[in-house]
Amino acid sequence: MGSKLYLGLVHYPIYDNRKEIVASAVTNFDIHDIARCARTFGVGGFFIVTPLESQIQLVERIVHHWTEGPGFAYNPTRGESLSLIRISRAIDEADHEISRLWGKKVVRIATGASPHPKHIGFEFLRKLIEDQNNPFFLLFGTGWGLTREVKDSSDYVLAPIEGKGYNHLPVRSAVAIILDRLLADRHA
Amino acid sequence: MGSKLYLGLVHYPIYDNRKEIVASAVTNFDIHDIARCARTFGVGGFFIVTPLESQIQLVERIVHHWTEGPGFAYNPTRGESLSLIRISRAIDEADHEISRLWGKKVVRIATGASPHPKHIGFEFLRKLIEDQNNPFFLLFGTGWGLTREVKDSSDYVLAPIEGKGYNHLPVRSAVAIILDRLLADRHA
Image (cartoon, rainbow over all chains, first blue to last red; front, side):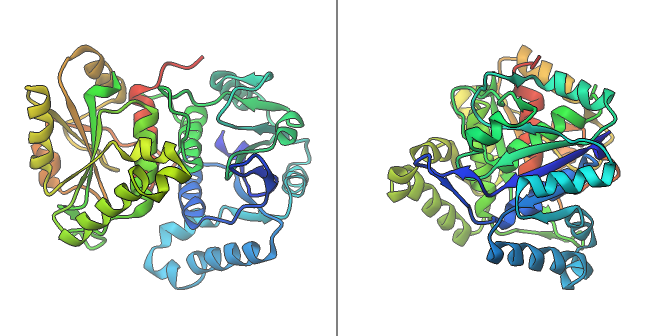
């Protein structure tokens, strides 16, 4: 079931702390933690979206180190997870790649820390993934989150993770929790 | 409910990749990500357990930066989460501190990536925390995990998070998922 789901970690377009639209730098821990979660839950692929040439090269170097370079000998399980990573210059480019692979339209879902007029619940999305045989592309914003335009133009927006009056989860933790809610076997 | 729960991130005693018992170095991202998850779910406190003087000083410096130093002006929500952090030289020392605070015996629960003869399920522990009015101390190992002795001497061992044939979650992601399973409001 997880193999229908693709993750996109978006570094542009996102907001910075002043609500301006920027391109963020890639964070090494995002790459490792999200790839390991993705592999744990059997996700189809993990797209790192950035238009910045320097950041593309950085990601390529990290992935190469762990999948083919000296990192693979040191810890082969890390390479197993990082092999899920694809790099795209834009959200649409990743979307087209998934669509070509499946020969089907991709259902695009944005995530975020605040409610959205068209947001859907976790159980609803879990059931959608179970029932429909098409690819789903789940977008996560870095920095201060996905732009309003990205959310408005997605097919769905997922409900935020509700905290006890504190609403500042790292994107890495949000990915872990959301994959668990959507894909984990129901636990006793 | 979450305020009955305390987290312990154990840097000694743990296993390294050769199953030898070592003290690991503190990872900056563990501190931030786990503190932010802890604050999100209303956890009572987050103990960083390390006997190494250099690591204690490092944690103190990081916490001070975000709770009172220049980091607080830059991003006050970060200080809000890092203020949950306590430092202890040993698991027992943290346990005594929680016990003194509550005037009650602490229920100690170990976690890990592999099954244990006495492991309990997530629903069982969730209910225990709901029903009992005493503190719970949930231990997470860094490196290659908590030692057998720590697990055997705990009151309970929590079941591992089941992956699809891949069993290498970062401790940061495991904490996020486990707190969500134990403490989140049931989502629709």
